[in-house]
Length: 288
Image 1 (cartoon, rainbow, N blue to C red):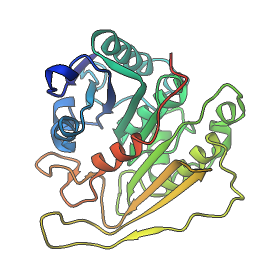
Image 2 (image 1 turned 60 degrees about the vertical axis):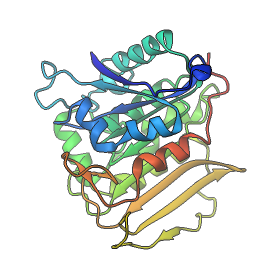
Image 3 (image 1 turned 90 degrees about the vertical axis):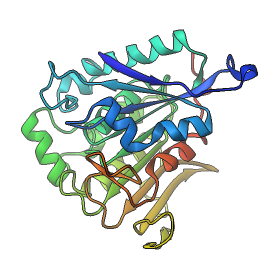
Image 4 (image 1 turned 180 degrees about the horizontal axis):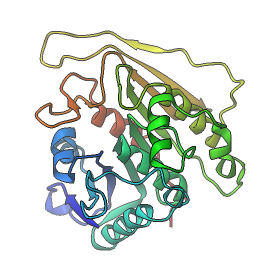
């Protein structure tokens, strides 16, 4: 598997200090380089001091460079999941990476694969960021994938995460979920179904009181225009484990990205920064 790396320029005294790693998985028809430019993640990584790994799907494997997240073998941790995890371990052997701060994020099909990597390798991944992601683990065919993207799952959401939710060895998996309510490719029903699955995985009781929504107004003028959006935080104790962001008027695109590149929308909120701010709250303290 091809992959690209971004390593921030650091002061000489800091060059050997372990740094966080964010793994970014592109969507269909995108390349790793386009995804990096569209999300502006490298500029953020330079400011904040973390490395970024961009795996790229081979055109010889899929003509549209789609990840095969809908295949049962992939959902069980095989196929492209092994490729991505292998790339992460290779980078960790060659760069000073803080093993407690490895995060993964993606858009659309890349988000679908990112959630599988996170849920199948929770000792490796400290938190996951999903933008415009389909519901997890409820299909096993390409046609089923299209159906889920449009309608969500008609099957039991709990069944797909049953083993993880009940396993005493499964650590919590913090997740930030972002979705545009005007998305016609992956409909926003997927957002709330994913939120329910991650609440189950993180043992956040469905019977618990719903959090108070935080509403952010639309901003049409100024240097940083943005869509209106709503944030819901689901927590255990003082730890926010699931953050759900619904963005008004956003179609199937990375929020706050570079609109020169397909599947990126210039108006905010800045999805890259929101993910990084969420990631910073979490470490995999039992990483090996």
